[in-house]
Amino acid sequence: MWPRINGMRSIEFGTPGEMRGRLNALVMAGAKRATTGLLDEYRTEAEGLEYTGERLAVLDDDRLPVATIEVTAAELTTFGAVTWEHAAAEGEGDESLDEWREGHLRYWAEEGVAVDDGTPVVCIAFRLVD
Image (cartoon, rainbow, N blue to C red; front, side, top):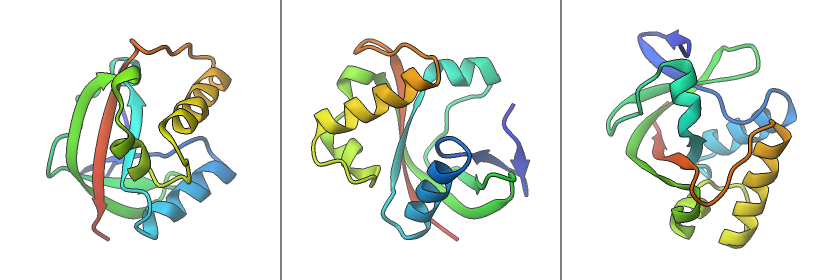
């Protein structure tokens, strides 16, 4: 299970280190308003999907809360069906859906996970609360 902070489930963006610091900074600046995760991670952690209105604690490398976000939408889809609107809302500087797809495929491959267009993913949109 994911850690609970002040009664909220938590979320950790990217891998610890430079990537997490960069992604958390984008969240706190309001530039990152979405994220995409693999459905298998929810199964492995025995977690339910996020839901509209749920608040999540954003954690840093030390698993300390750095921000609170509120889910504005959560959708179960496939990797191949992720829209440019969602990908652009991730706020990571991708200039096209193809660039977003390449970056995510590379990230998951480095994590040892094979992803293709049919892989189930969870697309979460959120807003910064605190």
